Structure formats: structure tokens, C-alpha cells
Image 1 (cartoon, rainbow, N blue to C red):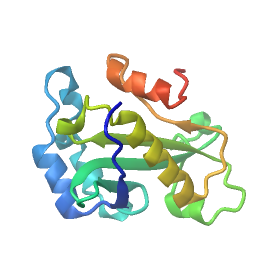
Image 2: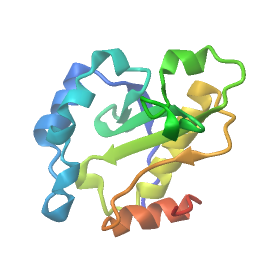
Image 3: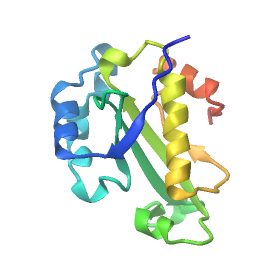
Amino acid sequence: MGHIMNFKFVPMNLEYANEAIDNWKYGGEYHIYDYVNEKELLLDEENWGLGKFAALDEENHLVGEFTIEFFQEDGEELEDEGYVGHEVVKNSLQNCYEMWVGWGLKPELCGRGLGVSFVTQCIDFAVREYNYKGQYIRCGVAAFNKRAIKVYEKCNFEIA
């Protein structure tokens, strides 16, 4: 069992975004997850503290990032695929949206048994932050990424 780390979630900022973009390299087939590919999304200031958060460890070092998005439950037919702005969700009483989450751990921390704890804490934070009462929380994963899939299954995600 890996060390249980308590993660603290704070709004993404320029310093954290640049640290991930410049330094987080995953190597091998995992290079598709390098944050240099996520530059535009990470540097989108309007999203900091709404959909984009930095995960810090007990010493306030950047150890991960976390993304929260919402979609209409029947969004496939809609033009923008049903994407719903964070402010809309925060101010909505019926809250009938579907939450999608995404995350990344600092490369040096991958494979150390932190995955389940990180994913669980991300989800707990997102549910609290948005007072989410939806039936599902969804995340996407590349089929080859067996280590992530194993973590998600341990967190009770079903592969669809």
C-alpha cells in the first residue's frame, strides 16, 4: 500500500502551470500525457479555480493537476456537445449535469501507489466544490493505459 498523501486543491496559477508544462515528462508511450501538449488549457486563466486546479502536497509542492467539466446529460445531439459553463452549474438548483473529471500526477509520483488516494480525493473535492448530486462521474482514459485503468477500477469506475 502506498503512502497516503493528503492533497490540497487550489486554483491553478501561472507558476504551477509553467512548472507542469516545462517539467512534467512521462516518457515512452505515456508521452502523450506530457503537459506541454496541454499548454493552452493549463494557461486558460478564466478556468483557474473553476475547472482547473493544482494539487499540492503537505509541504505545498505541486504534485498534480485536476480538471472538472460539466456536460448536459443528453449532450450528444447538441452543437457544442452539451458543454456547460462552471458558473451555470454553481448557480443551478436542479444540477442535472454530468461531471467529467481528469487529472495528472507529477511523473515522479506515478507508480508509487498514490493513484487511488489521489483520484478519490480529487472526486471528493469536486463533489464538495460543486455540491454535485448527479448520478455519474465520468473520466476518459487511453485504452493502452493499463496502470490508470487499474486505479479507476479500484475507485469503482466502470469501463464503458
